Image (cartoon, rainbow, N blue to C red):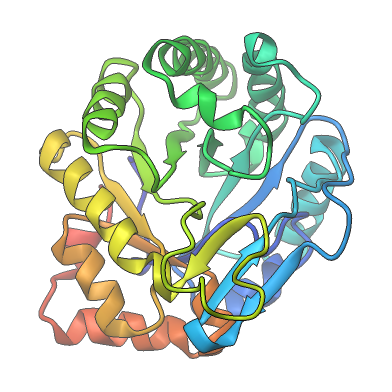
Length: 304
């Protein structure tokens, strides 16, 4: 993606939604942080309770509904954090549309976020896969996705010329797409000249939690039950793209071995979130050291 990563293990979007903990999270050893998701206008998200643990399965179910302080407050938070910490951690931000923005005007929301963030971030993650905003995943349809990404790419090119710096564009996709849909999505990413793909968001499947308390809760499932499903998506995308775009693997990484599994499937980088809840912040170093012990040269995980 034109970036140098100090290590291949990052934080997934959703933990620091408002860019309020950049310094603390950087100090945990992450090679990169993906903040957000953030929407153009503030929105409260879904009513509480909206986050549920399923400890028997080492899983979470959330239906936050993309609660956001809005892009203006978010950007100010990020600017203050970067000035205070002077972090060298690669910073990405997950962006999406407001709940009440119709899909035929969604591109306006994404472009507004990109405009505000461009001078302050290293990459932007385009979220078209949250299961908690009605209709958002419809933007993964090939025609809709192509239209959206073309608009975002054109705006990025104009901003690159204006600011004299490159900000990479990655697309975060669902784990619930069919194999054929994934191949089609990969084709769109290639044609619209994206810089990377993030696989995956949380799942609507309840496989692995259906027999536990809270397993019935509505929302996106993350954690251990998502691992195999997410790895399958990584493998299909990597096989289809053949190195043209790097794949960032996320979903069910609760150990160093899980991180290596994603890399073996074709990912270049990995992200963690639910694993921090069940394992703790030492998971960053465990993943980094396990990858190193697996004799993966750092150059394979950097600058791609």
